[in-house]
Length: 392
Image (cartoon, rainbow, N blue to C red; front, side):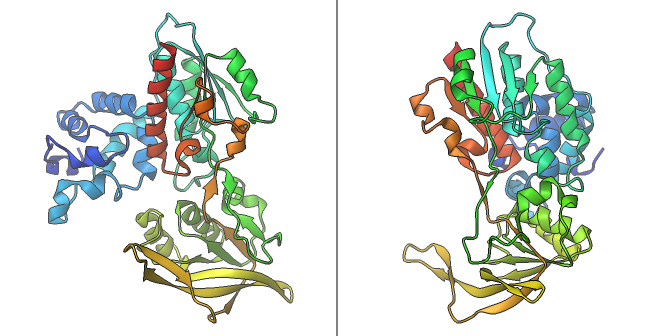
């Protein structure tokens, strides 16, 4: 037994559970674990969050459970995520979803086979509805399969959902794009409800001169097929989010001299701080308060014209960042990987909003923009509740 379990106070009003987007009942799971019932604990965790085995590996614990443990007051928070890993990861590989033999006769289409789409498919099948799941990629998983590197997430845990969905009789169709070979109107005509949970795969541009150079690539494209790119030796990553950390840690594993350029401080980085620390330990360099404003050729290579930034306090008291004129300096690079956020393609709804289509629901990135896996799962839970009410 992990000794961390004995330190848990089993709080009646658990701050860790309140801070968790899916409100994992940590005290209840911890109690079962301490009583020698890890199987029961794993089943409870899976029922509440089918991605428990994933989120306990890639979640930002400092932002959620770990960071809100009452024992932070003594600077000794309980590492619940370690126990969740022990409980959930092995369980997922043999997990099975019980579905009712009698079906409701209602059919739901889900577009997007990432965490939100998969979680919704599981819960809707458990409610007795038929589910058709579609995705732009050949296999399910979304960002888990095509965005998170193997060194952070063993894909056997993503593969497990293919088996789970198949056993639950969820029909999956890959290489299907809404607005392309998949029509929203056809889905609505052939299903009682449609849920759009397409991920945020549209990369934001820097909008600076020289960005069109082929040696300037987007992080998601790079992470989907890192071996496809000849990075050269000097790699510059622009951005400070989780995708940036995955990109820089992948590049440094390729033997590249890798530098992350970010316009704010380390404290302002949206990335998981543990990943930032691990990137530094692995040899990634960081240049903070820097932003590229142009790219130009320099002989056979490329140079980023970089400008300094600083923080300042706005009139409303909020902290903001501004670029400082007259601070231009050159940073040579062989490949620049841009990772300054991603957007969803709102055109997938054909110019309409969900409010105009009562049988169409949204979840995941399509609802809230790019967020964490656990937040995507919670959004799916909320969407499924609305769908079940609509179909009742």
